[in-house]
Length: 149
Length: 149
DNA sequence: AATTTATATTTGTACATACAAGTAATGTAC
DNA sequence: GTACATTACTTGTATGTACAAATATAAATT
Image 1 (cartoon, each protein chain N blue to C red):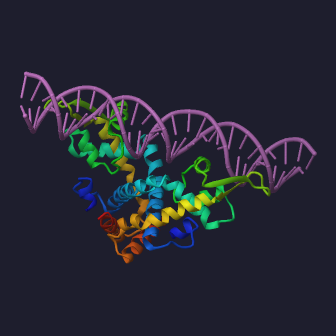
Image 2 (cartoon, each protein chain N blue to C red):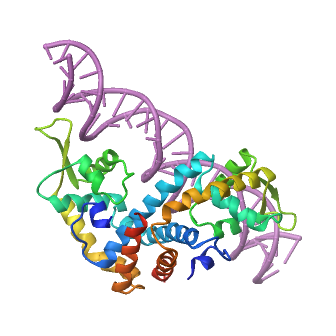
Image 3 (cartoon, chains in turn yellow, blue, brown, green):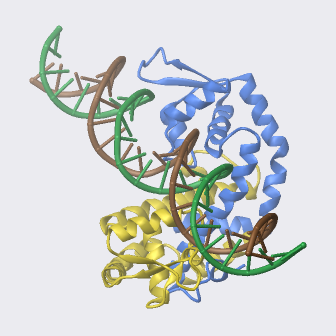
């Protein structure tokens, strides 16, 4: 469905305004696909993002700053995200011996199991994106890369 | 800059996961361009969206349900958005005589002036999107339309 | 070594969102 | 015309975000 029809707007002032509206609208659409999926598994999208970053380095730790820089959503408050993940037993946190300002975060076995559970179900989530062919997905992604300059 | 480099991730499991990360990341990027622009003018993106919808029907009123359906971000709480806009004197609200459940919202002169002020400055905002040609903006927009199915 | 500057994380707070429940007016069925 | 359902908006609340200020450690400067 064209963005014009989605938001009942006859036309846009120019193609860039149309693209901006479309990006914001599509982001909401993506969130509506993604949020219930993760909610069912007892996670938020951001919590999952952190766990995936930690698995990438496992068994090495990752510090807060690095987590922040690797997150898709940079605005997340890493301190509070980690608090939640500790409550659930998915990560551990320790003060770094070499630099006591830094916090070493590691994923636990329980965290790895949760991620495995997510992986098992995730094809069901990504099926919702298969309205585009793989080539089109690549093309869209490249256009977004170029949009950001 | 490629999404891989933005979030320091070597590769994605497939092109659809890459696209999803890219969409969420790019949405944040867009918000970071857009938010300060509107903040400077004393509005939020959603408040501006409502005002633009009201101008489209001016001098006719628009009811809450229609505002909701035309908004780019459907999750906004229209009641509270309108409260804010009334505080600022940009809109009026009246109970609809024909159906007393409905609320008629209208943009004021002051609201129209504020929108004119936004319009005057907006080329400065949209210049940030000119890393894509117009044709590419159209192509990106069409891919997003098709992604949503 | 004391002072300043920079880095890494935490905390506070105002505001926004998601989602469920509540209220009030209208429409429908009997 | 009373009872029930539906529509349109409002309110409450828990959680999340944005942004600024605070803390604590380390590094650099004098």
